[in-house]
Image (tube, rainbow over all chains, first blue to last red; front, top):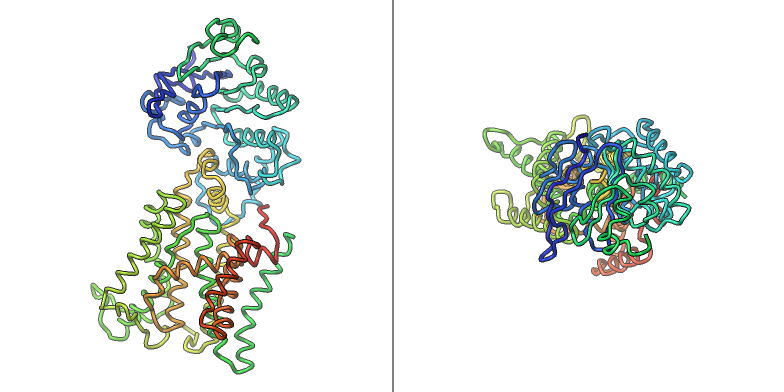
Length: 249
Length: 324
């Protein structure tokens, strides 16, 4: 079997009496999109936060590219190649779209303790950043402050940033949320191609997108993975239908 | 709108330069001292503007560095005059470049632990902890009789600089002005650099900065230390201007004054501290001549700026910040 890029073993996290992550095992293999679905409050975002390092787990291990992530903060994990997007877009609002991406390019090139050379005249920053904006279809909006972009454009910008980091795995937390049908369709197409660059752990409520994209699906309910497998298996799993999908699926 | 800022900046720089020249022409050297005071306060605030304006780190303890710079100048000069070595046989000095270097180095050494501890907090706790550190240094200074205690420490004559007669008001102004321009150039470079990008991103959204793999703590700490170094240099000049290092340079009023300068002028703006210091010293002098309660009116003006002109004077004159 291929070595997984991301490997989560027996992960636990309690918020007081609430077991928000309750013995989760999960892995992400090269070239795949692994969708994580589940009802609101199932602990999907908390799981993403633990993987990216913004919340520390109580027990269990997270290994990324074979390395134990224990003790590494968010910045350290990001520089190892763990790129993420946020459930609620998290950008530098005053910076233009281009400067937001340039920040990722600069981080990838090494330490930021460089005090003199102006970034806006530095082609080694602006060119790759512009290329990433072109890839996600935001090139025409590159000079607008992130705060003035539409909701959907901010989601695209987050993905451009993750791309610019040269991520070796992507954690996308509801990238389709709040997007119109047109935007969802084009983002679905885009993410479908992206898995060849790096595998994606995708948290998403849009079932059309999930079924179209996912190679595997795991279902998280009350902090536990109640089912994990190929798309058709999950679609037909009676427990999953009861807990989450309902009769609509 | 964006193109107006360089013009406004140039005009402010020329205006500050013109004050002492006019003063000399009309035979009112007192105004040279006022202009020098503006240049030095602006320099201190340019330092604070790195932390506060670019990094959003509201340090309420920058008086510590301003005062330390002042005491470095006064203590070294005192030892040079009475001929007693400082310690380990190190003599005092009246050479400004040496004093500047020592002031900057000491501020960096002290800012490093203060920043490392304070930056573990944020928001109002950061404000309080920087205030607490500065007050510790203040009380230490007033309880140390060897260097004047509550009375402060006088300099017999202004310290010296090769080729410049610093005892005369105009040459000393020019020295302060040149250092201010140098500091502004540095601020401009830093703001546009990779470090500046990371620092401004840390202010806007620290999580975003972490998510691209840059730890905000390290960036903020470096900014805090650089900021302290610049403010410390201003402190050394201030002691030379007044030929006196006063404990009030270390007190929280001074920290507040520096913040007020930045808010008045426009935080994060290149010439914000210059505009702020000009306004502040002008009010202090003009209103102070009319009423002893000038700070009441300054308070009203500050209230007006905060309520109606968030960008300060630079915001009014040159429009909103452009990030490119």
